[in-house]
Image 1: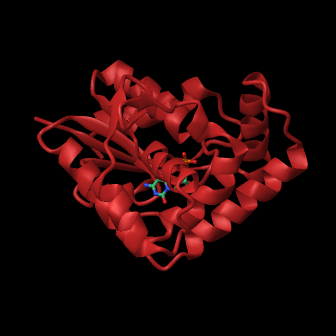
Image 2: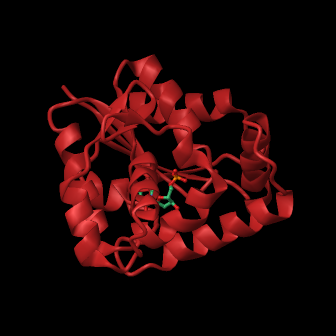
Length: 217
Ligand code: DC
């Protein structure tokens, strides 16, 4: 039997960290859908294509290869894992992710990857749009302050010169944009389990989700 675990939630709620660990523990595929939106954003910015220029985006997408090698994002056969994590991409990704055509195209690719595979997929619309029949759905949350602090530490550790206030503002703006866009806004699926990770360790969150999965909920 294949299992499909949908993990949704706002920026910095710990989705990717938690999903990677669970994928290893359960020996299933992990798909970071945010990395796909980031990859498209990286390429569109490099080609000076605006987020509302759907025609150019379509031409670009038809000619774009996105795959993963382990945790690395391979865009048109080049590893862009580092480039897609910069503040510039974070600032712009919501606008490209709001484009209906971009979403339709990436959702199609995500659904294709999940076919006949046990998978854990994280994003904003996994339980609602990409895998509406997922065997398990989790909605991860955490306070804005805690999420900002996690992102801050992550970026500082990677050597980026960033300020806490601007990270907090970026997170708030992305929450607003992701929750208020027209096409598949970020929202909890009705049948998802909400897990508030504020004050919890990574291990605590992982065991809570594994418990939900094992109890077959
Ligand atoms: O999870 P992340 O921060 O890497 O996601 C980057 C952006 O991509 C985020 O601002 C919203 C968007 N996104 C989305 O709209 N749908 C998804 N399934 C995943 C990400």
